[in-house]
Length: 415
Image (tube, rainbow, N blue to C red; front, side):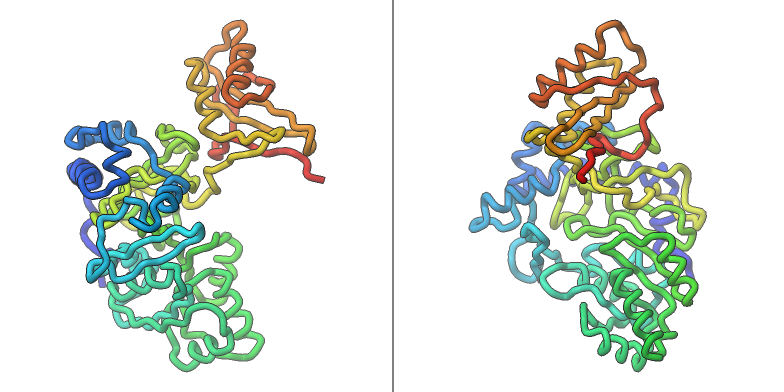
């Protein structure tokens, strides 16, 4: 039995990068030619030149709020906002709705969201019976996981959400090998089974999503004989990254290009710094170019001890959209980036809002390579110019600010 889903996982990193960069200009051209959204967003881009990460980083980032606005503006003519290449029929078997609502198309073909790689890494194998407790109502989560399980060769029991007693009965009688669903519902099932004396000991592995999996909860499951893994996927992009038996970060999927950028910008951060996860998918049906997930993460050095050679990220570290209301005005991470870019001395900036509600104190903490006389005053003027608010400036030595991806920190007292 192989430990890898396919040979792609063991590619030489240089070979993988060359193949991704060879596919990139073709995907950019495809998006330009076949979607209204990217025909507009990338109108000035010559696709053939986008053959490196540096060239990719010069393209605009599209974030979910922009996708939603395009969908709202054109609901009747195109509910997908000009981002999908699909038309209704055999090549679009299902349509889903996520909060917003944002409508997502499903393309045809085996394992459309590429979830099989993550499910295989979690130990699921052909012939396993899988208890799927993700919702089968409107949203795609259950279908994403189910399609991956089918591709691995599993049989799926479509349990859905709720009806805990009936689900426990099915687990006791069908004796599934594995679980798909949220970690919180799995805990409910385990606890209820223990209370009622229901035998669910057949469950030995799980792939969870939709919620954070704290180390303490993972250990709680392990104490009860269940090995729990996580995957990182979205309805727009499919699989982005996944855990392996090493449990050291998450390995990036083979079908996407991942960047980590400074929140509110499209600028890649230094290796290891926390920033927003931006993904370019090679999916021709929904060719999202530099799609901002709104999630924070960071690249881990080295490769996975399991032998998978793709890059790794730390997993979910919070949300990148740190927009904050200060003295009645919204301040966005992009505005903080705008202020920092005006001064070549500035390495990193973080806006801290303190005080009590209705008595906000705004301080821009700035790491500066050098501090020429009057730099703080000039930065203060830029704060007023960009945000229309007055703020203090605190000059710091390089490396003083924490590496947590925060651009705006709300430290106010809400008592």
